Image 1 (cartoon, rainbow, N blue to C red):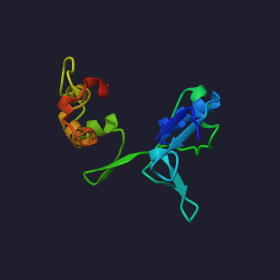
Image 2: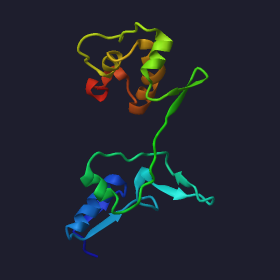
Image 3: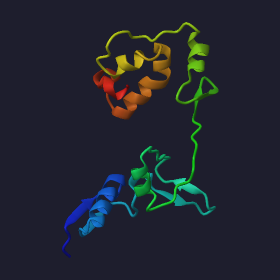
Length: 159
């Protein structure tokens, strides 16, 4: 078998590249170690008929008509309005955290912890919020996500 392109990985990036090349008349072979396309955004129907996110929820959002037209060529999308809550000290709070929560927790006159030009992610986050909010919602989650201390990450990741 002769192909013009071999794409390894059938996640979003590999699938879009393969589709774009095929649309341009190229012969493409796409392979993946998983038994399905879509990578981590794959879903499937449970025996009850309910759609299940195989690897956790993903939400597709775009303000580009061109991107929307491309994506909806292949699948219909379910309209979804996210209403995210976080369990904090036994109470469900809005996510992202609302200013009303900060005022209740810290007080009306709260100020960001850091002033000046942030040199790293931690300083950038603290330039937006009090330390108590950073410690509760940002620090551990972000360090787990990246696998390094927030002080070693670029400030631009926060802003």
